[in-house]
Length: 582
Image 1: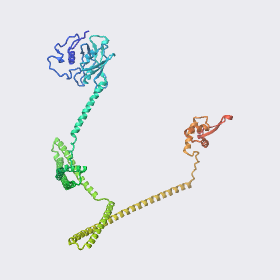
Image 2: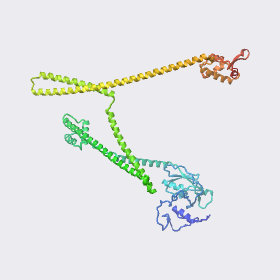
Image 3: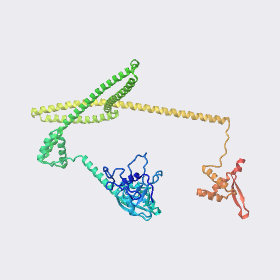
Image 4: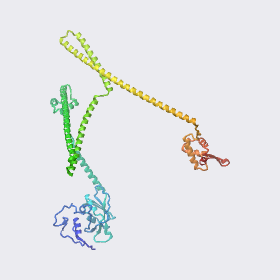
């Protein structure tokens, strides 16, 4: 069977893209100079076989350009493209690591050799599992070859030139889920995760700060060197860390206690240096703040001048002489200058507010509450009294010792007299301070008494207001009573008759019984009614129900039914007739 070939160049191009020699329907080569090793015509510069257009899958085109599929000729079969107007074949979601495809619609006479011939040009095939029902599963070596195989979905296959139904079929290629693909994909993911963890660990090790050097053990030589390092300002931080470690290890004993004491004393000498450095840095910081504030004030002043220039230029005298473009630029520049000036003004005001807040915090710290000050003054007064008593005792002891030891040398007398004068001066100072503290305590107590009196006055005012409110309520009650008495004198009110229903429970029973008897038009006995009510409440008594029904003759009516021994009392609902009578 022969088919007309309108354009042999299109066939040759499609087969050349597959790397196959272009063969016509009669078996003759369309291009005699085709080189199968290069996958292209001889005499052409070799190209990269991985470039788009050299395989089954065409080069990636824009979404606006339609994809044109051509006829593909193989040795034992021919692939005819599907109708381009049909929608693309549907596929399932791609499984992770998919290397296996499902191929359906194979001809009944198709063999594994035919499948290898058609799909082997997409890539290396590792396994083919063919079924007896015209489908198979193909597993490729690489994942990207699956996309090339999906390109053949929808092609119609014909074996040779046969027209037998068993030699034709329409291919349907789709993703397949295989355990081997999933296992390899999971292994690859685990390997990538291990590499990522190793990379992160290496990065953490690189960024981790180095470990501190080990602390040397105590020895006389190391102790002498450490004493020199402690005295050096530059080596003091490292040396004091070694000293701390030795003390924590328990290296101190009677033999080296003097050495440790000298090193601790040297460490203590750095306190004055550190305090001076701190004060110097604070001073420099304050100077820098003042300098920044002064510079910022000058900058703000210059911004004010620039804004004033723009405002003067915006007046009508000068504004009319500028062109439209110049006015636009001037307006834009003026807005920018005002925004920058406002921003710097806010920054300057923020600095001033911070200074004011710091000053207010200092004032708040210097002014505690009056009650806490009074308590602190009392404690300090007690401590001063104890110190005063102790000084007096010392003075008396010194006087007694001086009286006993009169024949002692004059030097000792002079020292005792000096000590005595010092103690007397300290005693006088303590007495003055004590008097001052007493005066302050009295002032605080007077303030507390005044606040207590104010509180008592407020309580009295509150009590007076409560009494006035009570009097108003009493007068209102008396007025209401007088109004009611006058109404009684004008005309006696009609008294309502007592209600036969005494509680809400009885009202509920009346409603339930009325509903029950309404659906029993021939009436019901009291036992039947009670058996129904006891389903709702087991505490219901038949006598109580009968008494309630008897109190409502306009709603319920008792009738006798039956003859002789079958005589029975039945209760009927007569509310619809009773409402007309009432």
